[in-house]
Image (cartoon, rainbow, N blue to C red):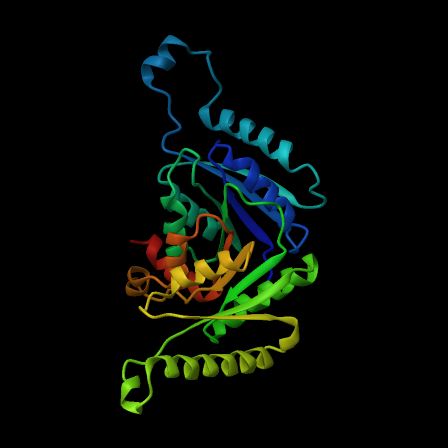
Length: 305
């Protein structure tokens, strides 16, 4: 199983923080975590000059005050740490830029971000990080229960899908979860040239997808009888909404999907299925598995722009 030894958790002093910290605590029972960074990015850490002049003894430095507040929140929701090292990071500036920068500096394996629906705050940041973060990213909705009982892994039978399956299989082993292998298949544009109807070709393509799924599981040493399989037709070349809808229908409480490597600017602009699922998914935790080594070169180039 891919190892998430070093985790960065983004906190913003909203009610989302408690959910994120508790979810992080649960992950420490699954992965061999040795270090967790709880990070808050403030737009500014400076008090207005007039306030400082009028109340010179009012407050300690803003970053120290924020750090103490964060320590209290972490202690409240994450008391059983064992040998895990927990550190507080308080930074100033653009949240996405700082999280990207420090995830590189600290050699982070997994970033955890909250996904807000009704709580106050922007939901844009997790989507930005999903597109450009060099490491894996887990987005946790505000209403997420602290359980992982049914894991859905959308696959296209590629190496990145194999990496996602590997992570999901590791979680399944610890949590005794049910594993769902999901594939979205398409009917080729020129199907009518075969003389068969659309409905007939749907069944043909579904059969191919089922056979590809069996071969994929065999290549990855996963017994087919230990996996539930789910297939859905993509009839408009937009698989993300179908994947999310099927996850809801199958009552998945975690989606694990592999993401392509970020080797150039074009790939970021074009996005991927994993990125697009972020636009639909507000209710199910989404773990986007990335190859950190594959993406580090791009991140370093990005930070020099």
